[in-house]
Image (tube, rainbow over all chains, first blue to last red; front, side, top):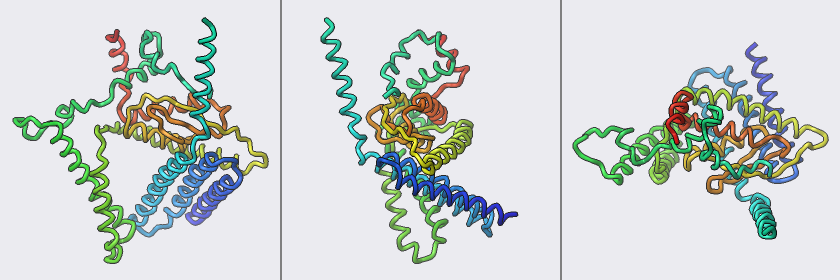
Amino acid sequence: MIDLFTIVMTAAGLIFFAAGTLGLIRFPDTHSRLHALTKADNLGLGLIALGLAVQVPGPADLFKLILIWALAILAAGATAQLVARIAAPAGLGDDEKAQDGGSDGQERRRP
Amino acid sequence: MNAINRNGHDHARDDTAQLPVRARARNLYAYASPNPGNGPAQTPPILPVLARSPRERALRRCLRRLLWAVPVTAGLWLVLTGGGPDSLAFGIPAIALAGALAFATTPATRWRIAPVAAFRFAGWFALQSVLGATDVARRAFRLHLALAPGFCRFPTRLPQGAPRIFFANAISLLPGTLSAEIEGASVIVHSLDLRRNTHAELAALEWRVAALFALAPGTQDSVSHTGGAP
């Protein structure tokens, strides 16, 4: 029963890892790829850790598993943030300025 | 671009009595951030005779952070490596470095976490991150990519520092959203599907983060506050 739980959980975890990698390959731009990596891989790792947690011999190893998961989530979040910041938000600032300028222009034209 | 809320601050000037209780709570927490000048009220001095200068208080905060960071990082290292003598050759410098970083990056203000709200947040967040992962996995496995990616700007009322950074990091695990950058008081959010109502979801998350950091006054509180507010 415990083995079955482990098999189901780690298999599901692997599916999410595969989905993350597939998204990394298929998604069109850097930011969309980051979505796939951060979200799918975090859940995949969590499911694998959960599946393995019922197999550990003692509480020390259980704590270690939880710790690895928590640190991986923190690192993934920070890395995603850094990559997203460097891959500049595709001209959002310019877009906004253009819109602001346009509306200003219209207001100026009115009086 | 539909998620841009430019008149967010105008709500505070509106007649708050017309807003629902939840919205009133949102208006109030913007002004309820902990004031660094109230330090002695939060942490009563051991020797009340001596008045502490702000500089001394800041130093004490740094030291307290250091005392907290070194045992925690040492504990992490021991759990991860088993504490063999070989690992300590790398571990001790790493722990010292972590302590120095904690000392150097002490925030200007201290934050309080509301325990009940933290449990509520953890449960909700676990569910949301599962939904987020399933959503992105489904999109990745689909034959035709159903994506309408793009950016939007979300102006937040969360104060600078830990609450705002926590908010930005949490955005990245919600379904369909990823925080790309923090620009002043706004978070630039990348959305996988701009057709979704991203702004409402982010506002809900913002409210939960405010509750987590004990920034939103309770419902009773907000009613009495707004009763007295001009």
